[in-house]
Length: 379
Ligand code: PLP
Image (cartoon, rainbow, N blue to C red; front, side, top):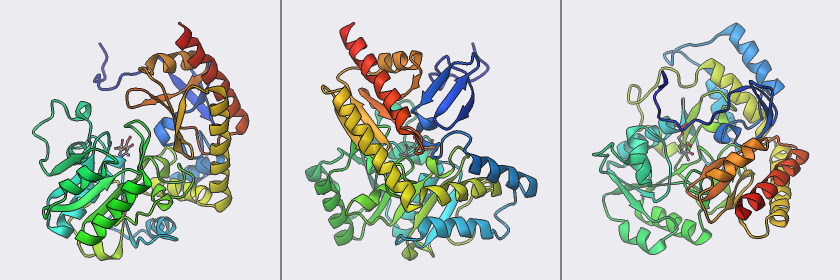
């Protein structure tokens, strides 16, 4: 029995250090980290610029309350919203918290309580975010949930249209459902969502906690669709390993959160802001994003050649290999061979290397993947 609660199915690997894409366990064994801490380590492990940012900030100031002005938060907010139609940012500490903020903002702004969300979505573990999540396994045993979420099959135009009524204040979705199986929104469905939101005055919340900050080859994944969200939520890759979340909103929403309506002690903490600013200074450079797209194309081509029997899904460096069986045995075998992976949904292997991954590391990963997938299917 452990002194920790058993809420994680932990693997018996104790990682003690990391550099770039490589992590090392306490026995000295090295692994290629194609989980990136589940889409977190945008610049890989121990990137020198991040190490420097946190060292410098730690000698200056660790924490001030949001009672005081923070030009550093303003600068980070400006970096997030420039080249977008968003005007304001709220900082918090995690994806679930960013989604809580979005749910509260949408409800207060519209005065309407129903939010449409989608099957196989994942929005986090807090009560609002969990109630928004369209997966029974996440919600089981915690009821009664917030009643105000209406879960509709993803990419099902007819069911979406049938579920809209006057009580609906917002639609909340992921452009690619990362946890749910690397399921991408179809262009047809995105168009219908855009039309419904425009014609009925419904707010659109896009959860970019996993897809944002360059993960799909653009700053945000919605940029690759017709969608123009009112709100997006971020976390994971924004901090490159340091906890930070954010909610971006349009200028129409500015007055909804007056002083005292919402907040958090740690949100936008100086250490987190210093690291996130460093992440954005790298990831939001055009050449960096171009490189992500080039690596993605390279990776997908290699996978298609090495695994002709499998469908490859996803965009950028949020990719998935669709398998026809539970993927846990593949993930275990890959781990033994020195490649760390994570699943998505019941039968997809998710591939989330750091955005800084080298092509030789992609080659090594593909080699392991092809031997594992062939090996397991033959046993
Ligand atoms: N939203 C999405 C799309 C996610 O993938 C996750 C985490 O996996 C969350 C929200 C929750 O983020 P956090 O674990 O930081 O609360």
